[in-house]
Length: 584
Image 1 (cartoon, rainbow, N blue to C red):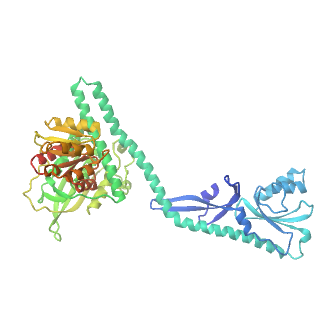
Image 2 (tube, helix red, strand yellow):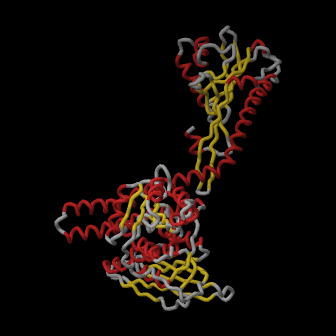
Image 3 (tube, rainbow, N blue to C red):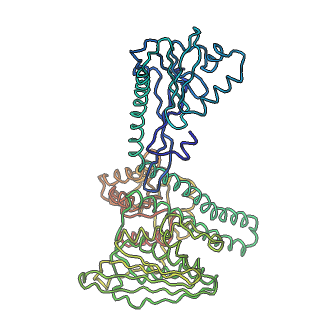
């Protein structure tokens, strides 16, 4: 079997030997062939086996009619019987011949065994158990097959004509034909399964690669968070040291959140269930936030960032802000990460007119660095999931290999293009171009870049089943002098709202996954209340379900807005301010 697997021909079958089934103790003959299963990711060789019960083979057994004394059986190369005819006595053919021909001569026995093992076909002359001289004919099923067809004919019954031996060969041919039919069946299955097996093999390799990358890249920031919290606890009297630990821990936590979001985005895209959520956005505010987010990393590494955002005649466009920002963040983060201290990064965002579609603008994001660059070989696979350059300089830099894969798939989803120009040791330049609809209302205001105003005199009903999440939320909003009441599930939330006076609560912050009654059902019950002052209360989802379809599901249930966990205070207080001003 090992020899066939390593060097076998996938279109050739071989009889492998006899076996005894453990469950039924039935004897079977094994037939095999090497098969190559092909999937989208590559080819994989397997050994495909089929077992045929000896009883089934006997149904096809044909005996010569010219010689009534002729018998046919099957033995292994070591003399063990697979199919034993009536004249083939003892438990083994070798021992049978020794017992009735050279009982005490073990050298002759060993010579017979050597003959069977080393020759695929031959004729032997030995006495049978009746002491009659017989001719024994054996023939292998194929090259190096462990099984032989064994025929025996008494010399007394042998005619002068040798034509009768063709009948024996016909018997052998019939059995071989049976094996050929089974072999053809295996070959046909091989050809049909190649592609599926190749896909399965690549999926298995991808799974192993995924688990390995995730184990490292999740544990790294998590180790930083836990370690920094331990240091802060031990240095509780050193306020400056505690503050440093908190800042670094917060940065590691954000990195961990980014990693989790990236993994979820990749899985959503590859499963085909990813959806864009377009909205009106301000390009100037978005790019300003992008640069501010990297200021600390740039400063710590002594990297100079040169920017040019002057060529933006259309500030407002219609796009998925989160995904567009994700493209730019990943490219800028990579530029900072792979540029050595003291290096330079040039960032430019500009627009091009599209004559055939004047209602759209071509938004071009160009970023160039003088960092370590990428080899030509790596650039062929740089958009593959978990792809990273393999060298000591890159391996010392934290990263998952998901960034460029997400960038490419996001650009493709938006119908854009991405071009890369890089050389090892000379830096990298990326250019991303995406066509976006122009928002004509240039007078619209955008306060997303401004600090939120202090919010007071609000009374919130918070449906949250997790004690730690409630504690964190309550502590954060209490600094704004906001009063909060807690409901531990959706049913309790509905009951507390109904029991309170109509003007008690300013809004409800609703978790989605809760025991007894979830947030969707609780919202639907609130919207069906008869009292208009209760059924029209603003309800904002506050959940870890953060995909576009999750946001839509919240809106479909009757909620007014959506805030993803972990909670972004800027988004939270901006939403509460809109509620207070009657905008939600």
